[in-house]
Length: 268
Image (cartoon, rainbow, N blue to C red):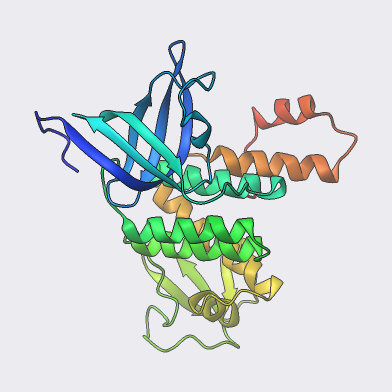
């Protein structure tokens, strides 16, 4: 989608999801959309606060939409938004996972850069989170596919130095910008040493085993942190704070908020 055209562009009924929105002036919102054919973009939704516009209620995260907008330059004006099918909310227990997906896209995708494949991955993952599918497996598979689509895919089938196939019974260390190196050390995912079985499970997107799924989490986090280049994910930190609260019920929410302002949680 060109950014420098002097003519007004009109896009009709584009498949999309809302990634984020915030108030703008008295009655409007600025909406961050992820669209199938135009990529991530920002639009102004005028007059929707207070529900005056007929499509105001449609502008919710995790709902598949058809949207229309017009304008020129970086940001357009939303002209219509309608739900695809009946609304189906993300279960409250999985909302943080949904926010995590959205934040990854906001941080890693450039505006007006189409990624129909990532849109398909995202749509499938949102639908999986709404179903009885395993939440953690869905997140790991999305992270793996996102890295690959952005050009940072992990070579999971071969050892980097020898080119030998990964063997399930051996252990490997992941080295950024190099790959997987066979080592004699025992599995320690927190220290970057992974079992061949876990690597092959991630390669085949078969993460039913909890231990292998946990190893995949550490590996993918290491790769994503490299691509994020130091940018922090609020959803990751909030999830860690919530887990801390659940494991320490005597701690108040305010105490956790104070703690999070000076320390960065270690886990997603």
